[in-house]
Image 1 (cartoon, rainbow, N blue to C red):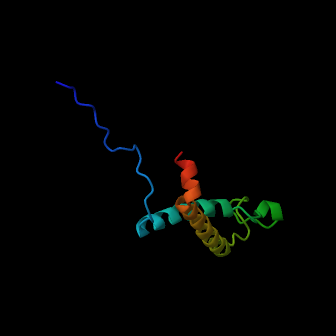
Image 2 (tube, rainbow, N blue to C red):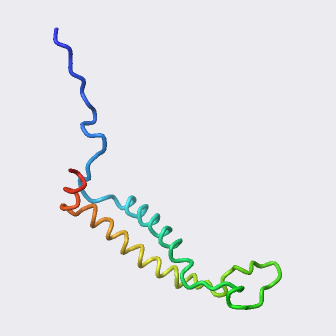
Image 3 (spheres, one colour):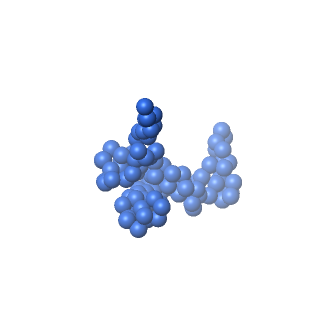
Length: 103
């Protein structure tokens, strides 16, 4: 009797990229990229009360920004996150990059 050879199931340890992602996955990736970008953009252009010499109200932190401009930073973050997400999906669908990563 010949011993049976063990079968590997699944044939590859990780599934290969086969096509476009579903909309839920795209939204999840965009959400993560948006928050990472927001954390990176948030300190840009911020000046604290201590740096500007402005009056510090009792009970507030002297390191708090004078004008945080959250709406502007949110809009900048939205545009940058869309570009980063598009760049990520372009990289995942590029055949040259796939051949490089799968070698």
